[in-house]
Amino acid sequence: MNGIFRSRLLLILGATCCLVTGTPGAAAREARPSSSRPVVPHWSRPQIEQLLHWMKSAEADALATVAADIPAVEAALASGTENQLDVVASAAATRLLEVHRQGCCNAALRTGWHIAAEPLQPAAEAAVAAAVASDGVDALFRSARPVHPYYNSLLQAYMRERDPARRATLAANLDRWRWMPRNLGSQYILVNTAAFEATLWKGEQMIDRWAVIVGKTRSPTPVFRTNITGVTFNPWWEIPRSIAAESVAKLIGRHPAEAAAKGYVLQAGRYRQRPGPGNALGRMKLVMPNPYNVYLHDTPTQALFAQDVRAFSHGCVRVGDALGLATALLAERPEWSRAQVDAVVASGQTVTVALKAAIPVYVSYFTAEPDGAGSVRYFKDVYGRDRGATALNGEGRCGIASK
Image (cartoon, rainbow, N blue to C red; front, side, top):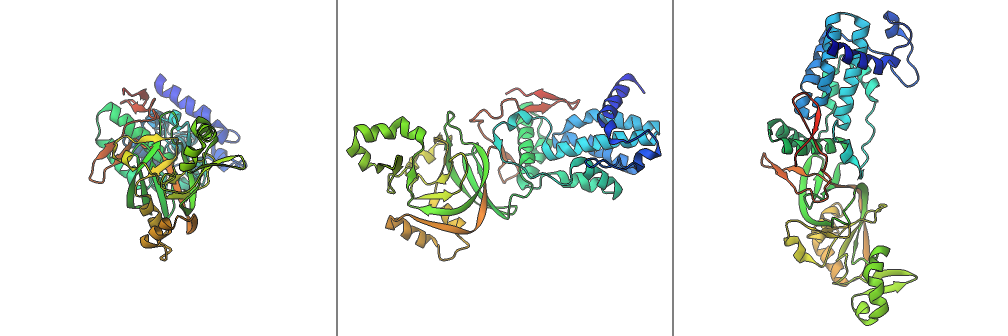
């Protein structure tokens, strides 16, 4: 074994020695597990070959950093020492599974990402042990990938792409999909603020698409997940304190008649705007409680939708054809046809309609997305959230991509 192989093998053995109880030998595989760690499983030679296949093909998944473990596994396989091989293979498989689940190189981009993926069960070490015991190594790694069609399309694009900057962008967005929940819901809204779009999905099928306006660069729309529980027509606008201090409070104090004409009122210490054609929320707001006070809503400034880059709001998501979105969300309540929606809006009365079931909404940020015709759309990184995205060089190491 040469020095490089020996060093890598010692690193992996050192990182995983706590998996083995007692002295090396058969007792290591028979030792009782601790409360938190499984017994190191015994790998057959075909299973090791399967593991090496997945490790060597990880580069095509933008996960080539795991290639650094390949020499240690091959060296342990060549040495013929069973217990040493079990420890090395288990450590490498656990690391490979973790990067399939969580990504490998773009952790810095996760700052500000408030969409929590559900913990995948069982934990990686236990999942590896169970897969080896059931001869399910291939199935384990196949099931670790996200199943969303956008992920699969970006993965195909990454395999074909040769430009380093675009590979870095694709790798960053593949990692973002790994940070998403694997089960997004039977029906959900996906807002991509980088694309200035919102889409309605049923399972893996996109049903409709709407243009949106998102936050300015100094007030970016956050990345988060919440549930839509209803639709409010002709909403009041509860004006955030920051916006009130910026303009509305002064207008009410200095020009009360003008403020009244625009619907601004001060009630019990709260600055509000009455429903009406000039209301900042337009004719509809989705009921989607969240700690950021960010909502999907209509807007009276429809002309802004003609712009390609639509970063104009204080953080909320303004929706083009917002009443069409509301009607789509109320589709399971047949009494709420588009005609009924239009009638309620025309009445001027504030009405909140509950959905039959809450619908998840994911306010996300993806700078690359399939175009539906076999290619990829690349979006301007309007918030600079791709800064630091990494490409992978031929040796499986991360390197800062040129932008």
